[in-house]
Image: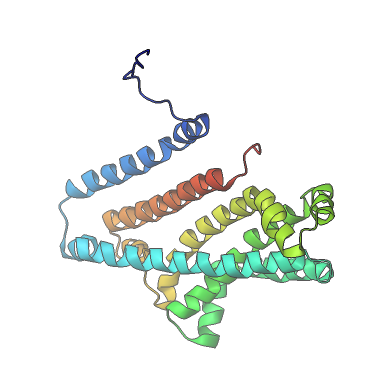
Length: 258
């Protein structure tokens, strides 16, 4: 019998994971560096009572949590409405409605965000619920449009091949169309996420909380430290969600599609 030798060489990562690590490693470093620089800057300042009340840990965690929850709920609703609507509007029976639906969705994004929120608050009252409706209306277009484009660009020959081997329309949608359309759909979702985080700063004007309160306080009371902190946290949150979206896009992209 021959003895089997075991080497201590580390197992190499598959090329796909190695490529993902290389592509997505820089962003968390940039976010962490920005947050550390802001923390060092705030710590070096002689804060007054207003700044200390705005920049204590409890307040920062509360407004960041409000901002994140508002953005997350917006994303969930946009995914349900836009992807579900995009699937329906690419079916033969409803395809004729796609231009009209895209035009209606475009109205929400074409309207200035602050104007849309103010108009909705007059109609529905102030609060997080009104802000959520406004954010969904503002962010739904990229996902709806990309869902329609992604599904429509799937090669018709692949769909016909699925029918030829006896696949049902639902099976073709789930196993052929959606997997091939995923990169385009997720690109729209990343855009919607950034829209939602940025526009959520305006929710403070209708008493919905969020990081916009820090920005408004910093501007109205001329407290640059509060303003910079609110702006950096908002930017860091948007970049972090976009980074997660990029990773999700890589994970869900079918093999062989760049």
